[in-house]
Image (cartoon, rainbow, N blue to C red; front, side):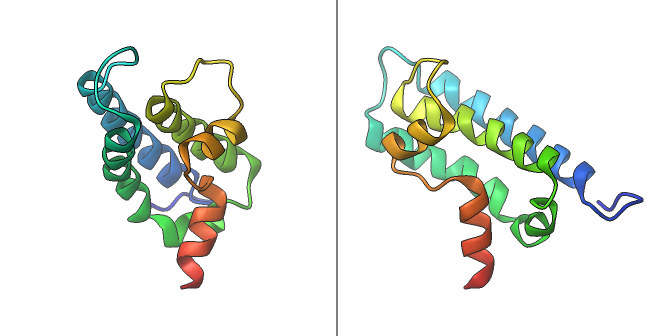
Length: 114
């Protein structure tokens, strides 16, 4: 998916919508109060993060825009909050640290350097 300005915003939007659907489907399996342990939740989260990996090479260029960074970060935040059963007021950085997951912008840059 290429948009007219080659900033890949439509591709990021599509990927985030797809990831949000996967997260919501997994949220039905793992409710916040009871359900799988944090380690099992992390395994389920890795399933949904693989959705991001398919477009990672393109999204490194998209991370240059603030809009794309915010969109990707907010979508990943949904997943990390589910992993740790966090309240909605927790910061994105804190929930990534508690979940033991790498923030998406660092993950994509690191993935493309290898």
